[in-house]
Image (cartoon, rainbow, N blue to C red; front, side, top):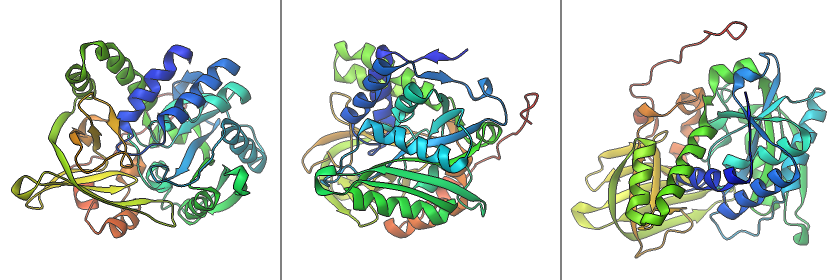
Length: 376
């Protein structure tokens, strides 16, 4: 049976989502706004994918942009709801559920408000356990699909007349950049609903249980907070199954906001032969040591924590800060088909000037399909 999400679930979703945000994933206060609005206005219900019918429609509720920057973005809760309504109109059929493209400070809660108002189920499935820069990375295997899809975007800075409503159709890889351009034009952050697929497809291709993982992590963090920062960090490491890859002082920050609504660059911790480089495109995508040896690569979880155990976004990091780098291997988290799809890597590799795919795809085994009657 599904689980009605309540006020008690909001803070765990934000705190757990903030770790999986991997340096990006929106704003914690935006997540709280979405969560508290949802649970006060209705009863959003978190369900396993198998609680839907195999042919039910499920779409992805997302936010697009690079709000680590100082852009004049404005996104209201109703924008998420309007994006879903526009997609349902374009599809001509109702959506039974909404999944999310990624966990994050706010993105873990993206489907709650439409769920509360429109009655769509919050599906416990994500396009990626952690946050990522491009829509294709959370598109559950549709990045290289020639099939026509539908994507909508709603939002914008009202006082600057930047509010936009957009409905676009086409192959996912061709229309995703249109939404990113709309995000930039709207002020840098926009609500989206996209890529309607059958529940059967979600079961085969999404990272199942991804929202529950964020909630479980958030609950562990809250329980540890009274004991201090080191206890919080220990709880994060234990609950995720990860490790502290490195720690040190930020000695260099080189981050640039691009017209595609990306924050691109790198951070360096420490100096000389102890230097650690974090390659960043909205989120932390890879970590190298001073000799250029790769220590972690997307879809691994890579997160910076301060001494209190609070996850810091790329936009919050400053030279002189002391941080810990959390690393959770891709081998122990559910992976969607889109985070191991070769087609999603070239644009990010080009922006960062590094190899990702060689490391990301190493040791990956194909997902097993079928196994439940009617869902094969």
